[in-house]
Length: 114
Image (cartoon, rainbow, N blue to C red; front, side, top):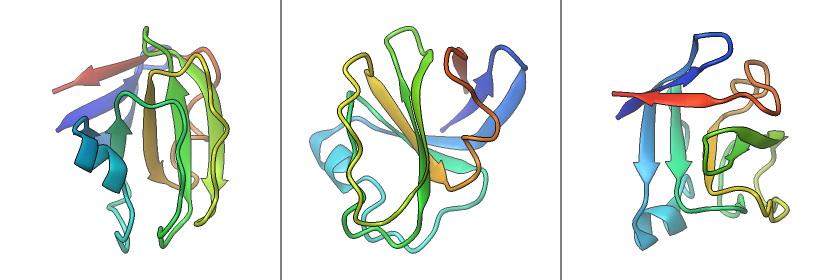
């Protein structure tokens, strides 16, 4: 598990970032999960679009390019929603609603620290 840090502000965004990189872990994502701790999130790689089918709570979703720069932000995505395909995105980070969107802006570079 890793910490997610905003390089611009040096602020820790998430204390506990899990990584989903296998077919099954990417497919499952946060489906069926009742909740996640406030300072936790999930990074899905590779990924440029998400769905929130079978989710039980709203999430913030940020899309990162290959240089770990934020290229798109979706806040408070409701269960059952689908994101657009973000062509520049290589990774997606999901966390509880109102956690990511308040601490990040387009162009911010993120650091993953173990």
